[in-house]
Length: 285
Image (cartoon, rainbow, N blue to C red; front, side):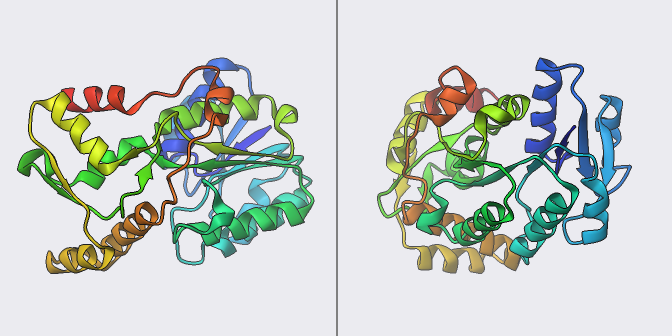
């Protein structure tokens, strides 16, 4: 049986959908925090396992009789490594045969503020002795409109990048790549994949492409992370939202997403959706 953690989140639920589409008879369980949160999954025939990364006894119970485990990294950054440690410890005790984990691209380079937790989790997995498959994800292409703020309305886009290019990939295609791996775990044992689309772009490139596709003049300004943080604080945004935006800015400016690999294409069996296609779809909404 396959257990998908974070099963009611976007990545988890889409991964399950692809698994069911390609393997209708697959035995799939989903880790959720409550029966209510898993209602839609249950309707699809997914077995619910109730648990929380922070609650070790619940995780220990949830991983019983699981052969393949997909550990989707926690969305709660506080104590993230300890949360992951609970899952890995329980998986080892339960005799899980293989663990898949969603990390960040080039995690060991520590270019993003998000990298250390992922690098440490990868280390914990390797030290557990459980055969592993690590998918190192770039940022979701679906988040591009969030990075842009009100640029489409004002024509002005100010965001730190220090001239670095970023590589974005569709979350839905990341989910499909995960499902393909989970369906044939033996083929991916003790492998690490860098999950990116086929091309990285500077934010100036993206602004030009947005201008061409929309017919509006979008001007990009590369500002410092400190000025960006100062501007966010002046708007009165919640502290947590400011912190997450600043982490994203540092990730861009440090070149943490300036990588391009063919792993995702190989796992999918087709070329990942490109930025121009996404922009056209986004502008139609």
